[in-house]
Structures are given as structure tokens and as C-alpha cells.
Image (cartoon, rainbow, N blue to C red):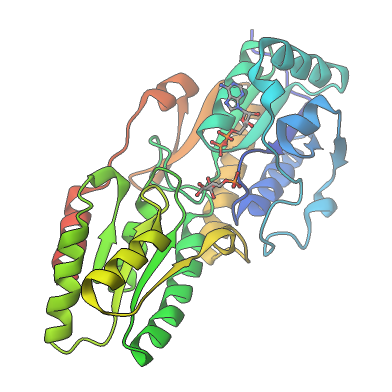
Length: 324
Ligand code: ADP
Ligand code: F6P
């Protein structure tokens, strides 16, 4: 028989992402509408182990949808990777009357969600990461805001790059994934886009491109470099030495994780939060929410973690073609 759900918890874990607050708000309000009480766990699994648990009413999440970051705070917690930590987390849930949990985070956080579920706490994951690197979903909370933030910053760098007739290498986040780099590369009309997934990094080719573009009269040369390739500063030094063109590196960094979420991030995060609350209140466990082919779906966590995702070949080819 399915466990009756009277109280659920919600936590954010791993790197923060704009839109997480919209998801928290939706979880709280949808669960309450379903007749279920909600508790907020502060600072991810670390806060769970420290029993940093608060009651959340509908009014506690008002005036949050437009805010960046996460109102609950987030953390990385090594102790929760241990069997003892996971059992302790589940015990603390039982002590506070928490029958189910919504975990908003990335792949690592899903492993923690799986552990809670294994230890008797019904758990549902929601994809929250700017990196878009979760295979079971076409959308992750925060990606849209992050690429818009990065795109606007790159436009600004391009202005000064053109004025000084410089080459600019702009490094964007994404851990080992190149989705932010690919999207910014296309959106900013970059001359070169370097993605870790494609293993096609060829510095001599970039040098040749810069020299050829100069001959054609181009005043700027924008290279979008993914964090997964990195080394932008040393790359800039080598390119300047080889081309004679002044070259600067800009590492955009954490600004990409902050800021007020875009409309898309607010709406999709709200839909995912509501969906997660609904399936959790209905007694489902060990599932993650995704957005695939235009609809909300859910998968078994293990199945989701086994899925693989690749940079779409057509998008990659278009990015190459348009940069010439
Ligand atoms: P993300 O969720 O963004 O991928 P991390 O990989 O840092 O970020 O994971 C966030 C947190 O999830 C970790 O600090 C840890 O508390 C928990 N976690 C990660 N891997 C596991 C695991 N194998 N088992 C249990 N918990 C895990
Ligand atoms: O996963 C989001 C992300 O910003 C990645 O793009 C980046 O590699 C990582 O988090 C940085 O993590 P931290 O906050 O631990 O420095």
C-alpha cells in the first residue's frame, strides 16, 4: 500500500540556479493545495543533517519568484555521501514527521535523493543547474537565465574588443558540458566556439582564423571557450604572440549563476515544482521530473542517471557554419 503523505520537505542542493525560488514556491503552494504541510530544509543535505528545518506556509514564499539564488540556501555535503549520513538524514526526516522530500539540484543531488528514497523517505528530484547537463530533460532550471546573462556580458566585451581591434577569449561556465558555450557562441555570433564534448580544440586553426579575419577587415574576434576546456589566460598569451593581435581573456564566472530569473525559468520552474509536489503527494518516490518533447515527464532516478546526452550535431554544425 502506498504511504500516506502528510508532510513533505523541500531542499536545494549543489550549485544554486536562478529559478530555484520559483520551484520552491510552487512545491509549497501546490502541496498545501493538496492538503499536505511543507517544511523547508536549509543548506541542502548539510542543513538536513544539522536539522535546519523550518515550517513553510504559502505566505513564506511570497515575493520570491523574481529573486535569484535560493531562499533556502544550498551546500555540498560530503557526509551525505556515506551510508551513515544517509540513514541519519532519513531518521531526522522521520523525527520531524517528514514523509517525502523534493530535492532541487543536479546529478549529484539526485544520488542523495535516491539514498533518501532507499531509506524510506519518498523523494522526487527536480533538475536545477545552469549547466543543462542532465540527460533526462531538455530543460534545467537556471540555464535560460545564465545564457541570457552571459550573452549580454559578451555583447559588452565585444564593444570594447571592436574599439581596440582586439581578440577576446570569453570563458563561460558549464563544468564539463558545453551547452552554455554553444548557445552563447551562436547568440553572440562568435568567430570560434570551443566545446569540451567535441575534442576539436585546435589552437593553430584559431590563429589562422584570426589572421584571415584581419585580412578581411574584421575588427574583433570573439572566442567563446567552455570552462571544461579552460586555460583562457594562457591561451590568450599564446594567441597574441602568434598573431600579433592584442588578445584578452575574460572569465565570466559566478555572475552567470546570479540574477533575477528569466520568464522561461520562472514558468518552467513553477511547472516542475507543481508537478513534483503532485506526484510526491500521490505517493510516488525515487523519480525525477523532466521536460521532454514539450511535456512534463518523470523517470526512475537510476534510469535517469544512466541516460546520456550529447551536444546536438545539427546545432554544432550550424554554429561552425555561421561563425565563418
Ligand atoms: P549537483 O547536484 O549540482 O550535481 P554535486 O555533485 O556537488 O552537485 O552534489 C550535491 C550534493 O549531493 C553533494 O554535496 C552531496 O551532498 C550529494 N551527493 C552527491 N553525490 C552523492 C552520492 N553519490 N550519494 C549521496 N549524496 C550525494
Ligand atoms: O554546476 C554549476 C556550476 O556553476 C558549474 O558551471 C561550475 O563548474 C560549478 O558549478 C562551480 O561550482 P562551485 O560553486 O563549487 O565553484
